[in-house]
Length: 94
Image (tube, rainbow, N blue to C red):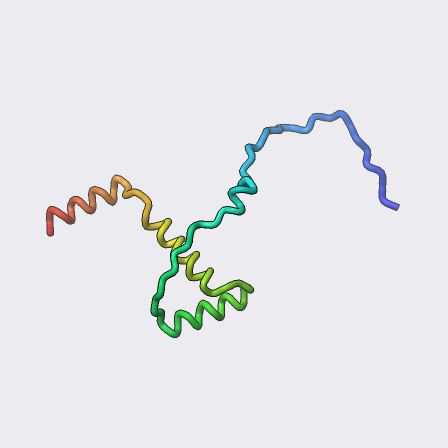
């Protein structure tokens, strides 16, 4: 038999409310609109993604799609002040 839990009236310390960070069920069910495309990929790329997809029990096309989405997210961010100056400097030199 397990030991009984003994409760006390001592303070619990620094407690704080954590905001709800989980997405709503509507957000979880959301799927982005897809566009069908035809693309020729190198044999080694397709073999790589098929192999990795098999290891992770997923679809290789889904992995490629997520890779492209991650690339798009990273490279569609606004330019920082530094990169803007660098680009302006390059335009004056060129």
